[in-house]
Amino acid sequence: MTYDKENMLDKLDKFRNQVEEAFKIAKKAKLPKINKNKISNIVVCGMGGSSAGGLLLQSFTKDIPIFVNRNYNLPRYINKNSLVFCVSYSGNTEETLSAYNEAKKRKATVIAITSGGKLAEKEKNLIQIPEGFQPRIALGYTFIPLLISLSRYRLIANQDQPVRDAIRGLVPKTNSKEGFMLAKKLFNMIPVFYASEDMHGVAYICKTLTNENAKQPAFCHFFPEMNHNEINGFKKNAKKIHVVMIKDKQDIMSIKKRMEITKKIIKESSGGVSELHTKGKSLLARMLHTLHIAMYCSYYLALMNKIDPTPVPVIEDLKAKLKK
Ligand code: F6R
Image (cartoon, rainbow, N blue to C red; front, top):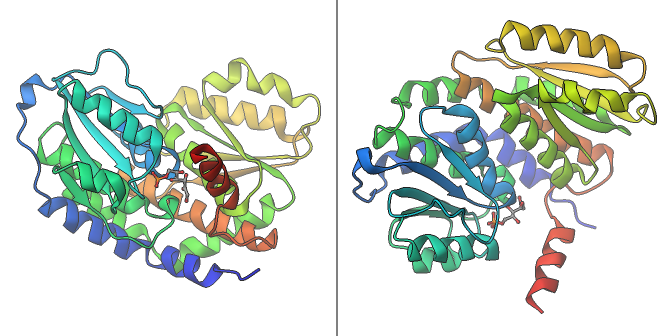
């Protein structure tokens, strides 16, 4: 097998440039006119790597209802007062195309974010992003235009400074090192990522990056909900699990306390507990910094697993079978 590890590493090292470019694309993009006061909800349609931006947006902004639609159809409340982003890196994902058609039928305002494919052919309200990436590594291109569009519509606060802060934190050398150290702990284990509900999007993307890059099982859950069910499952067969607690300075005291107690409870019965402390001035900076580390971690885990991090043949094969 030929390994494309150089290419993936290069993309991770240049993630900062990606976010910078995505910021420029988003600032310049021509957005359709909306009546801001009439928008009652925001929907981000997308699957897999292309849904990650929506999940971050949902974790990030609590100013307006945001729904991440990872399905063929849309909830019944989507109508002409909805702002619907259809995100598909390839532009050819069938669930996203189906949700797109439904959003158009319901006369919602639709904006497509894609590198091409059928979505680019169909939609004139288009934020075109560069080709040549695996969708999960194109997070800058799929997330920043969502964020900046909402900020340009003044549906959320201005995000220019938080984006600049975030860019400063995407330092390849230190983040790569931290990712590698974490990968060493996770090697031969089943990673389980926990965070507060506010950071759940981040924990979920850590999980999916591990699944897609390192090609191994990984899971996630969030506080306080996991204290009411999952914690009870650490009595049996938990020695293969290595827990990564994602801790953020904005976690409220009750969550901090729960994390500490949980750590003590599962320390002996699990295969280990590590902490990943988010770093950065703004929440946005802390989220992207943590995910940059997670990208490196999943990349190094793939190399330790002797697996090429880049291709996802199982996903491709499944998509091909569905077309038959
Ligand atoms: C592959 C990946 C997948 C895709 C998903 C949807 O790298 O991350 O999760 O993102 O299958 O495809 P797109 O993003 O092209 O709509």
